[in-house]
Image: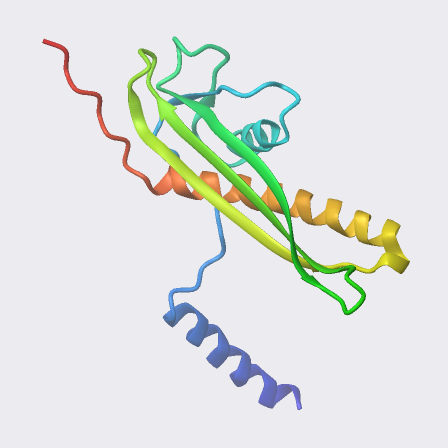
Amino acid sequence: MRAALAPLLVVATLLLSACGFQLRGSYNLPYESINIGLPDNSVIGAGLKRQIRAGTGTRLVDTREEAAGTFIQVSDLRERQILSLNTSGRVREVRLRYRYAYRVVDSKGRDLVGTTGIELTRDVTYDDSAVLAKEQEEQLLWRDMESDLVQQILRRLSTVKPTPPAKEE
């Protein structure tokens, strides 16, 4: 049985490598140093700082002046939208929508990365008989969306080519 399993495992490994699959590794940000212009109690800011420290060669700095780029939050909007009602007019499904926009500027305030928006949505069923459980599920989904947002921001920042600021004459 094990002898038949070994060739199958080799074939599966070759197929995965042939399709371009690779594990998500560290991010290579195009900045030597970056300032995260978010408050210390910001979940997104803390997540970005943690991921940058752990997986990039980019140095985190405290001030805008010493940073090659400064990450600035433009908007952070959370919405809860009712999708459907049951026959008695009570909520049956809810959509959670998280809209976030950011930009990256240099030390003089010129855009390196223009305003970029990310929108995340999650649909969740709702049940009046399990209000506490559904509230906990909703909070878990919000935390999941925050984590997903941090990963998406880092992926976008690592792939975007910052536009060099125009030279002043």
